Length: 381
Image 1 (cartoon, rainbow, N blue to C red):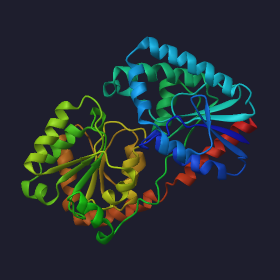
Image 2 (image 1 turned 180 degrees about the vertical axis):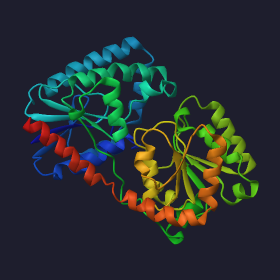
Image 3 (image 1 turned 60 degrees about the vertical axis):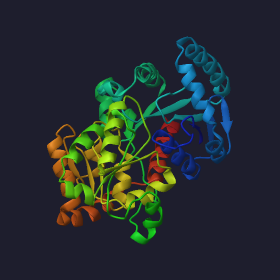
Image 4 (image 1 turned 135 degrees about the horizontal axis):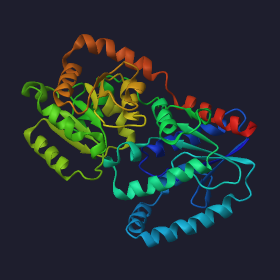
C-alpha cells in the first residue's frame, strides 16, 4: 500500500494541524501494510521533513498575507497551483492520498481528508472574513472529492454527519495523541526553566491559547479578576500564546492585569519549553467557546495538572470526567471552579491520577495505527 500525505501544514512553529501532520508523518511509514509514504506540498515532493521544518522561510507567510489582500492574485495563485498539483498527482492513482487538513486536492485514486472542526459553520463570529470565505469554499469541495473522512473527535464526527448529511459509515473518529514529554515533573526538573520566566513550581495557574475571541480570554480575565486578592497573589495567572486577531481590547486588559500584579503574559512559548511550563502549573484553565478536540487540555492532564475547561463542543469528550467543567459564559461559575482547582486539595488529589489515566489512553502511535486502518479500508474497497 502506497500513501501520499499532504504536508502543507508542516511549518514552524508547529501548532494545531501542523502538529497532527508531523506526528502522522513520523509514524505512518512503520505501520503494517504501508510500503511507502510520500510527502507532498504545493507541487513538490519532500524526502526530509526535518529539513522542511527547519528551513521553511518566514517570507512564505508574508507572501501569503500579500496574496490574501488581492482576490485577483488569490484566484491566479489557486489556478496555477491546481495545474501544478494536477500534473504532479496525475499518474498516482495506485496510491491513497490523505489531505490531513480541510483542503483536499483532486486526485485520480482513493482519497481521505481529516476534518478538525466545523467552527466556520457553528460559530462564524470567531473567524475573519477571509478565513470564512476560504473554508466555506474549500470544505464542500473536499466533501465531493473525499472517499472517506477522519474526524479528530466523536463530537466533530457527529457535527459533520448532522450538518452535511455525510454517511455514517464513511467517517471515523480518530483522536489526537499526546507526546511522552508531557508528564509530571519534580520542582527540581522544572525550576531552572521556570526561574527564567520569573515563575515557581506549583505557584501559578496556566492558560495556553492564542489571544483571539474563540479562546474566551476575556471571560478568563473576568473570572480570575473576581478571585480573592490573596489567592491571586499566591497563584497569579500565566497566559502563554501568540497574538491572534480582534484582540486589541483583550491585550489592553492583559496589560492592566500585569500592572496590577496578578497576571503574566509570556506571548508565544516555543513547543520545546511547554512541557516544563505545563508540569509546573498549579492548575490549567482552558475556557474555550469551541474546540474540535482541545489538545492543550490533554497535554495538561498527561502532565499531572488539574484542569478547568468548558462544558462545550469536544472538551467533555476529551477529559472523560477528569476535569472541572463549566459554562464559559457564566463568569461567576468559572471563578468558582478556578478557585476550587487551586484550593480544593481533596478534589486535586483525586483529579490528578484520574487525569493521567485518561491521558494514558491517547497516543500518537494509536492515531497513526487507526489512520492506517482507514487506508487499508480504502485500499480494499
